[in-house]
Structures are given as C-alpha cells and as structure tokens.
Image (cartoon, rainbow, N blue to C red; front, side):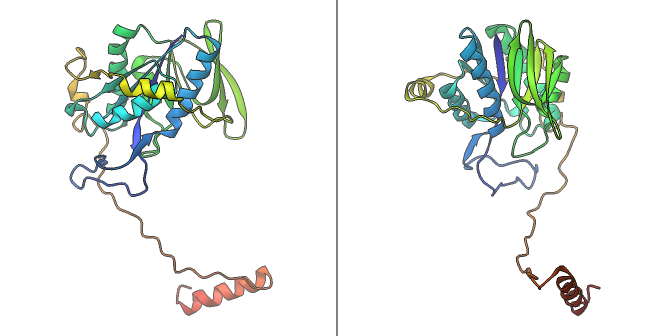
Length: 267
C-alpha cells in the first residue's frame, strides 16, 4: 500500500496568540506539537505497515519552515518520506483553501512517490476544531471518505474501517483510493526509537511551493482564496467569584439560591 498522511503542527499552549490585523494564528515563538489526532492517523498507517512491510508512508504538512519539526517527528515514529508544503501565497488559508492546496500538493507528490491508495488525516486540528479539511480533501480529489475512524485493515482491494458513531461502532468498507479521518482509538500510539530519531534528524525534507505545483490556482489560496473571514477574536473572561450552595436537601438549596438571586435583584 501507498499511504499519504496529512499532518498539522499546532500550538502546544492555551495562550494562543492572534494577529490583530489578519485574525490568524501567530505561530512564531509558540511551542508546537504534531496535532494529536494526526498521530492516530499515523499509528493506523504504521499498523498497516506492520502487517505488510512493503507499505510506504508519506507525510505532508502545510506551514512555515518550523513545521519540518513535526514532519521529522513523524519520520522518527513510522513515516518513510516527508514533504513540506510551504509558500507565502498559502499563508492565512481557511479550511477550504487549505484543503484545496493539500489536494493539489498530493497530486504533485504522487509524481514522485506514486499514486496513493489512502489519504489519512486526523479528524480535526486542536487549534481550530473544524473537522473540515479531511472531508474537503476527499471532495477536491473526488475520493470516497470515511470519518471518525478508530482502526482499519486492508480487505483485498478495499479498506475496512471501524468507525466511531454517536453511540455505537460500525464497520465500513470503501474502495481505494480513499480518504479516512481518525479519532482517538482504544490503543496507544507508538513512540520513536533512538535509531529512527537519529535518522529523522538527518533527513532532508523537500519543500513543495506554488511554483512546483503547475496547475494550482492561486486565486483559491491564502487569504484571498478563503471563503470565510474571522471578524473578531477575543479571550473569554472567566469569573471565579462563584458561590457553592450545599444545604440539607435539594429543596433547601433551591430556596437559598432563590433568595440569593432575589437579593442580587436578578429575579
């Protein structure tokens, strides 16, 4: 099998900084990690490779130069190749523009790595929580998709995926090539060993820019190609001046609450 995994480097902090002009994340100087949901996608690919050593795992990420750190972490864990999708023209892309760029970049990488049987993504990124990019990549490529995957296996010429539903699990099969997004499974993800970590640190990761992608439409990239705009951002104010009401029973607690609200002229 030939698997492509889309990963994202996300801030490892609750103190997310926002550019007041563009309303996009300021990533410079902020500690970053591989998006946790993307590590579940990588682990599922690694498990497929455990069963079939001929499986090739290629990771791609769109972002600035520092995103190569996330790609090297993936190489240290299980990936065979990595590509950074980077260009100033891609900056400020929303999910629609990002998914378009990634779909075009996947086609470009396939020229070198061969056609991918599967495109794996995390179900969402923890900095945006939109869960849109994976399904949109499937739409751009015209591929079938399965979301909220827990684990998968190859079943002859199809991919069999255990999917997390609202109150159940179900097993689905799809033809390949396909797109699958993964949520957190019941098993732990693996850690890199020393040998792979040293090799990953020495790895040269090629850049894929807008110039490299011949057919890309730059009008659909970056801020100008984004269908959505962030009009305002703010940090919620957390009021910790709460009152704990613990009376003998629920009725007494309700009466005390009513009295407090009445004294405060709320009711």
